[in-house]
Image 1 (cartoon, helix red, strand yellow):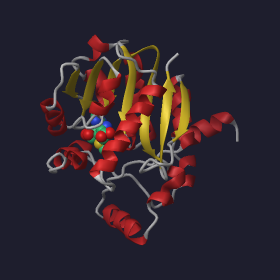
Image 2 (tube, rainbow, N blue to C red):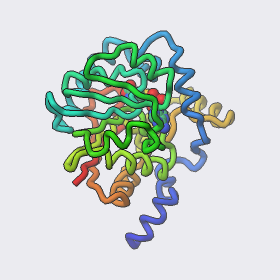
Image 3 (cartoon, rainbow, N blue to C red):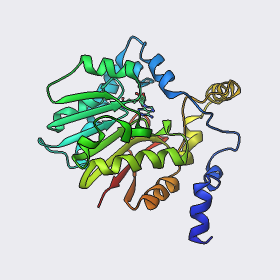
Length: 259
Ligand SMILES: C[S@@+](CC[C@H](N)C(=O)[O-])C[C@H]1O[C@@H](n2cnc3c(N)ncnc32)[C@H](O)[C@@H]1O
């Protein structure tokens, strides 16, 4: 297939459908409402959907993931980091020891309120929609000022190719030249059935879809991520997670570098 045709078909999300069954769709979810409601859970890890393994194991895993992020993003004690979709800040706090300053933004006022309750002198948390980040009051003030950006365990909630592209497009001007964006834990369309690997899980998905919901958001294909970067004129790199990670069997990380 000609390159232009590939780009067009990926942009229209047609080719990507080859990686997942045709019946899987992403209804228009109200993610603000969903995460505001989730914030009422008692446990901080549950408030951001970090469940399925014990809290002790998740804490250890988050420390390991933060150390890996620090290495990939070349973080240092003076670095200024933007953590997009930070939720209640459970993972931001693991990143904090690796930087000098952290700014967290999230769509959910309920989760941001919880992040602010844990406020430290070198972390600040704000409500902002990553899809419309240029409307965030502090956007202009932070232009070109971040050494690195993280967007962890959340890219699936940008549930169309266009929304994913829009988010990255808004993030790039906030980075210093040579800065990087790390997207972690993206559900992989090529490994869809490694997540939905039991009848109860598949039945749960079908029941949700019958109700017009899909709380998992979008499973992204590697080719879509590469195309997104190509359209925005930046370098992108698909990263397999170490297989000791809890969700490594169906999620990947992706590193974007600004020239
Ligand atoms: C699974 S939680 C992950 C939180 C945190 N990054 C972590 O790793 O624990 C997903 C987060 O994405 C946020 N989110 C979803 N859509 C968003 C948007 N358009 N703008 C900003 N945040 C968004 C939700 O509010 C929620 O806090």
